[in-house]
Image (cartoon, rainbow, N blue to C red; front, side, top):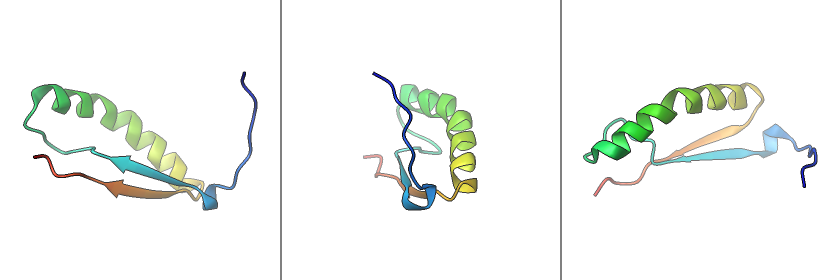
Length: 61
């Protein structure tokens, strides 16, 4: 079922986890490269609407 919901962007946060600029695993690096452009566009739009964006990188161990 789909339905429209409303919420306040200024009460919303997006947590971006593990979007590395480089990674030892070639497959992970390719996936991040594919996601980076669309993710950046979405985050820019979210910021314009007042959403708080949190970057939460993990160590690449």
